[in-house]
Length: 62
Image (cartoon, rainbow, N blue to C red; front, side, top):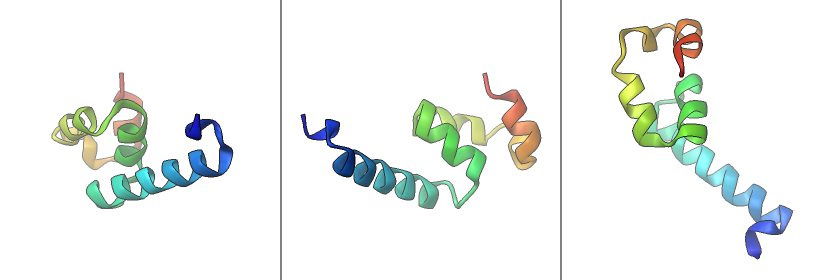
């Protein structure tokens, strides 16, 4: 029920996003991938050679 309250939902989502931003060193494509697909999957994607180029990385996300 609490998550249905916009203020709480936005606050928690923002804090989660902020924690991912720190975890992935501010690499926005990885942060967004982790937010949507989960940090474990994004961590695996981080090891791919194309993760160095944000545009190429974004195009390769399944």
